[in-house]
Amino acid sequence: MKAIFRREFVSYFTTPIGYIFLGFFFALAGIDYSVTSIAGGSAGSSGSGTAELTQFFLWLLIILVILIPILTMRTLSEDKRQKTDQVLLTSPVSLSGIVVGKFLAAFCVYMMGVAITLVFSVVVSAFTKPDWVTIFGNILGLLLLGAACISIGIFASSLTENQVISAVISLASIGLMSLLSVISGFIPIKIVQTILNKLCFLERYIGYTYGQFDLSNAVYFISVAVLFMFFTVRVLEKRRWA
Amino acid sequence: MIEVKNLSKHFGDKKAVDDISFTAEDGEILGFLGPNGAGKSTTMNILTGYISSTDGVALIDGVDILENPIKAKQKIGYLPEQPPLYMDMTVKEYLSFVYDLKKCKLPRNTHLKDICQLVKIDNVYNRVIKNLSKGYKQRVGLAQALVGNPNVLILDEPTVGLDPNQIIEIRTLIKRLGKNHTVILSSHILSEVQAVCDKIVVINQGKIVADDTEENLSKNLVNNNKISVKIDGPCDEAEKVISSIAGIKSVDITSKETDEFCEFSIESEEGVDIRRELFKRISERNWYILELKTSNMSLEEIFLKLTVGENIPAVKSYGGVK
Image (tube, rainbow over all chains, first blue to last red; front, side, top):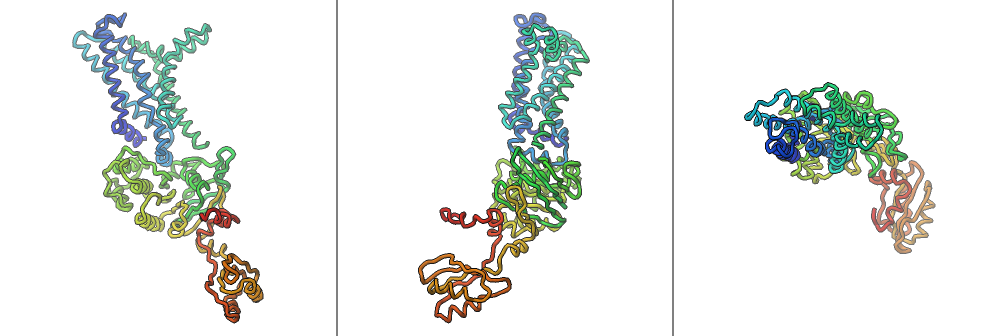
């Protein structure tokens, strides 16, 4: 697992993927920050030109939906296409070790991206006293959300040999999971609405942007991450038996 | 040591490997021979735990690859058909990664250096793999299989893409490794198997059609009582003369250039050598023997006979392609 983690992490930066992900993440987060917090007045209703970062963190969700598929698209599909999965699957490493190693590598690159929000928070702190508890709550929320999204992305990449298909599947799935609450508005059945809202990433994440820490939301995101890693292991396992 | 018992692998309705059994002892090089699509790679993928078998068991040093995959895989070095290389890494990084992956305990730098010297890639040690030629990539793949000094080496067409000099080097290396490892190597190049292997398993359409040493294979299949002879003399009469020799089973004219010159294929009864008698009778009539040979089957012919069966003449007659 450690060997796979190290190789994957380094490969994010020997291939352009890591730079593209971080570059776009920093750029989009920067635009997001400028619009919502610095020029704030027009965009944010709650936090116009203040140290209020709620809007900023909300918009980050949309940025992540777009960028995480880029981060995870080649994780397992490239291995299958280049047949490098043969060296992984015939070495004395368990399937879960392979999947977790790859997950952690993607997650670390993601954390490097998320770290930029700290910089923004420090900038805010130059003008006013920011609510550090809220900010760290937000970052924790981002990390949990990211873990779930990366896990879904890795699952998508285990389904195909093609990076583009893998990216599209994960973009669609993460997008869908994030917007379930919007869909639920169109379904006039109470119980379905409740279920969809409970499953929705946006609904679960939004609490963190207000600085609320809800354990059930944390458990939800961790469960999604673990579940999809488990599915990925099953896909790899099934491929051997096919 | 590798034991394979009643191994089968089905892909849907297709039986890629159909109830095969064989054993490779310690210090033995087993050649796995068969035409393309015979099931060689599938068998090797099963032995290394890359895919699972539908039925049967594969034991690596007594450890079942399905029951205890991690322990069994520790004993195996595998070079697949297409070497599993990460193109964006240097040879050094890649081998070091494999070293970690296999949880190798030997001293890292000296071990990797030794392997590189063994397969002669030390001069490209710091180069990125995607820039290497096919032969070098193949050798990096072989180096990868050797990391951790595993007991069992499974090599799927190890000399593909190498130039003749490198082929000889790698064969010598495999022979040397075969002295203290169990080696299974697949190939469709017959001379390779002949040159390297102690034991040959011929596989066709998922089934084992022969499993023996090379000499035994030749012995069993070659009919020593068959000779072919070219005679300058009237064919019809010559045929009668030959037929009248005691101990002859059958005489066939295999090619006839003119009425005065043709080639016979003669089969005699076991243990009877008719060559002297044949010579005497032909020369008595002032005809000439231009060529006389016992039909010795090469491994190539054995292979064709086993895998194509009775259709050899048909194969030969198509546009002269053999």
